[in-house]
Amino acid sequence: MLESALIVLGGYLLGSMPFGYWVVRVFRHEDVRQVGSGNIGATNVWRSYGRRLGLPVVLLDVAKGTAPALAGTLLASHTVGILAGAAAMAGHWRPLFLRFAKGGKTVATYGGVLWGVAPVVAACGLATWIVVFLGLRYASVASMVAAAALPLIAYGLGEPWPVVAFAAVAALAVVVLHRANIVRLFRGKESRFRFRRIPTRV
Image (cartoon, rainbow, N blue to C red; front, top):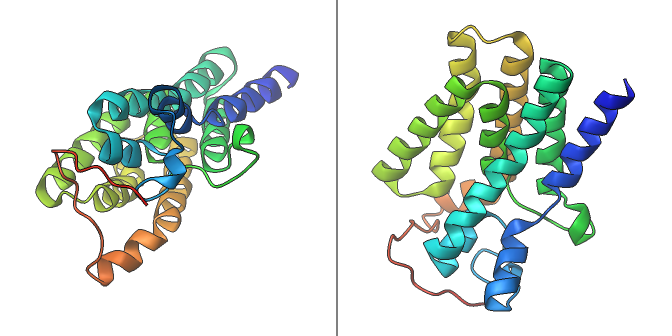
């Protein structure tokens, strides 16, 4: 029991590491929260600073979901792995290391958790994200569609109920955290992703 609790706590602490904020601070000496959308997640870093900073942040945000989920699964149980991954998502949303200020929208970390507990489901989710993103060039739409598809994919592949339940709850969280994007989409003000970076400052 204690070991499981420590794994879940470790998941939260790892998830709380605001890599988007740290990477921009180290390499550009700027606060990413004052740039673009103001979000510390990989999409804002990539959009504002290009792939040289954006790609490492994507990989780090995925890894901080995968590591605790995989550790929990291997060291304790599937359920502990999911709880540790969920804790990592909570940390990414409200990071301890930013004094619980607004964090990221958990998409990459959510995907990372699934790589740790259900890699086939994660691969299907990634494929869904890529197809929607390349078709529409809205990162927010791709994220919400992929997140919403994951519980159905998990169920269809016969994953155990904790995976399906986690995917459903996490999908709802992703959509709720994108509510501002949804409003901008309906107003026609959501920005399409540009593969050539256009610096944005506010």
